[in-house]
Length: 383
Image (tube, helix red, strand yellow):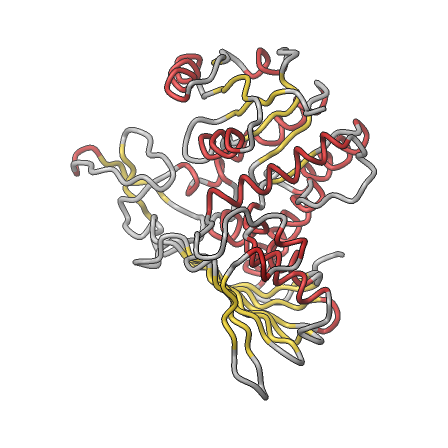
């Protein structure tokens, strides 16, 4: 029997992405919650959803809601996760799971105690060719992993007049580019390779120590033409750019860079994994291509086609070769994995999706990266 309906918290950029993905899966969306009762009402009306809740407490009291999606600002995640789990709801939370390690560890323990499904939206895992890369490595086709390199770069905060709540530490956390997009890269690489980061050495830079804030709010990825008289100077401490050297277990090495001030790069995640027998490379702006590097034979380019993929990757590739699957599809596939797991009802089984434990691990990594930046040296990461 399919699980009962869901409710989505958040009406900005990512909340409607959740709603669209759930609809494509045929899942029942009971209601939506914005930052005010009026925003909830307007969102419900514009999105064609039955209920717009006035408060989070009203949402949690709704017996028709079994799964709560949290696409709210970072600072709200801990309290909302805790309340939802306590109310007996399964939770799917956008990253970061919480604002610090103490909070995230508490949520991991609470989810385990309550016996509920608790997932974090590291959706990039669910590009079919990322799943295919994972199968290649698990089967030994790359041999021993020597090193991993890559980046995640954007340009939506390039100008000093670009402003969003994410740049403020009290709203988004002490780390920004690393926590916002770097954790996607770190989660993806550890998921694909099966390796764990054991030590980090970071170099971070705030390109704009002062940004000019519009008097109104600006949604993520939205620009806003504002007259100079409507701008207010705000001191910024969070990083626009960062590079991190990595040590993995099994003696592998790596490095990656993040930037939200890289002109022309709208949302580009790249990785290259070098093994002892072959290499793999992938770019999210060309998501249907997996480059295969060889030493003693011609290189290859695998174009996403379900007929050519390992069964575990094929299960998350719904269109024939030549019909591109991209960002919105990753949420559909992530939610399919979670909801199918809920439907099966065996919560002791291995989870095929990122859990609160994975979300906690990313916050541990962020803490180590921040400590490395402050001490200007290597910091060990507990496994």
